Image (cartoon, rainbow, N blue to C red; front, top):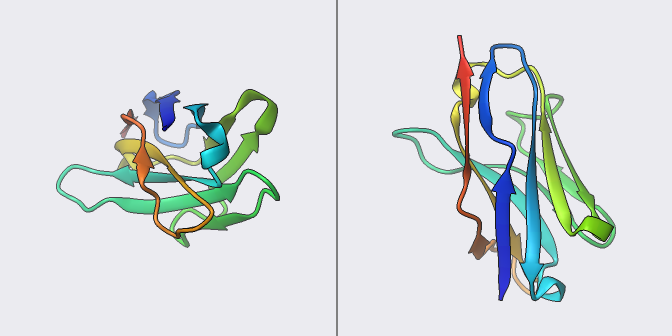
Length: 119
């Protein structure tokens, strides 16, 4: 069982930056890729970015390209989401999720970390 723990959320002013972390534990070999999602109040969950542990292949939602950067540190078993130019609509609970090699679905989720952007 892969376990994920997010951290790094908090309150930030408009235009500010935050770096979220997602630490992976448990059966780490079962994790092929990590993704970041978010869910704002009253809205559906939104995919933001993903990265594979091996080659570091990344994928981004158009809405965050140029502002958010996903990365990973294999030695620390941790993935990151660097967010810059934050504005009010980025306020949400941010989740990391893991998928195995043989599926495109992210099936293991962390508990989430809240990001609040003040205007």
